[in-house]
Amino acid sequence: MPNNIEFSDRLKQLPPYLFAEIDKAKRAAKAQGRDIIDLGIGDPDMPTPQFIIDALTSAAQNNSNHHYALDAGMSQLRQAIADWCKKRFNITLAPDGEIYPLIGSKEGLTHLPLGIINPGDKVLIPDPCYPAYRSSVMFAGGEVVSIHLDEKNGFLPNLSEIKDAKALFLNYPNNPTAGVVSKEYLKNLIAIAKKENIILISDLAYSEVYYDNEKPLSLLEIEGAKDVAIEFHSLSKTFYMTGWRIGWACGNPKLLAALAKVKANVDSGIFQAIQVAATEALKNGDTAVKNMRTLYEDRRDTFVKALKEIGWDVPSPKATFYIWAPIPKTFKNSMEAAKAFLDKADIVATPGVGFGPAGEGYIRMTLTVEKEKLIEAAQRLKKIL
Ligand SMILES: Cc1ncc(COP(=O)(O)O)c(C=O)c1O
Image (cartoon, rainbow, N blue to C red):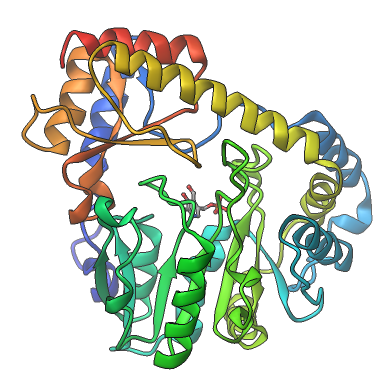
């Protein structure tokens, strides 16, 4: 890069990418031909169900799908989203005005602040959290106010801290802690948000990755939520479609209009063949989604049991495919633990501190590898605990 090119102040203020060191070490280990078990990535290992691929393949043959898509997405997709939300959460959403398809939920989550946050506005961000929330607020010039997610409170923000801010990001089931939320808590949260005039930005990317029949709630199930809330959904984890890039936002029409206006200036819609395939997934995907849950539940039970047998008693997640475990006592901090996992056991895991300072003391391991590998991982960890 020529010397006279400088990154913007906006970009320079982003925190260092704490996973970079682990990523580099992982790549080096793989290049050496080591047999790495990667429990680091939040990306399903399974293929997208065939009926969705078939829908894409046939829609891709149709010339009418080859052009710029409408910003607001195809009406058939918005209707399928509305029907799915009705069936799953018993919420009623107008396909025109209360639903907005996205190029993956990350895209919408990160663009929304540009439409609603002014420089200096305070935004409450959980710590630890999915890192995109923090950077999107910084890009918009907002002030990040961290709220500590404490294990003692079930990794829920302390309600007394929900004040003096323009917006709050919320994510249950939670990445990385696997925390879940009750209806009672959400009711209280909405009452506070209304009183304090705080916008609620709910990220429901893991709504379908739950166990023991405890279905996560949509914030929009709570009366009055639509007055203050926008919710982000994703097909990525639900249908093993991370690479396809499709999700949606729903809820308050004015918040959706802000997001739509930003997007109209940034992107040109979602490839229509993907929208057709997503419509098919939402309409006919119930069995596939059930199978997904059964697969992770089996892996979860196997891994938690195997770790217990080697003397590491980790919490069993109620939802998500993440195990968020306090680091074994042998290690000083989460970076040291993750480094030892990789150097001495050829296992990639994510240091909790990468999700924010409050993630220190924890390590995140994903259930996105086969059962046999999870058993093998526990055996390898036995040597270093
Ligand atoms: C909490 C959370 N929200 C959003 C996303 C983004 O998902 P999508 O693939 O829909 O952009 C992820 C992806 O890992 C996530 O963990």
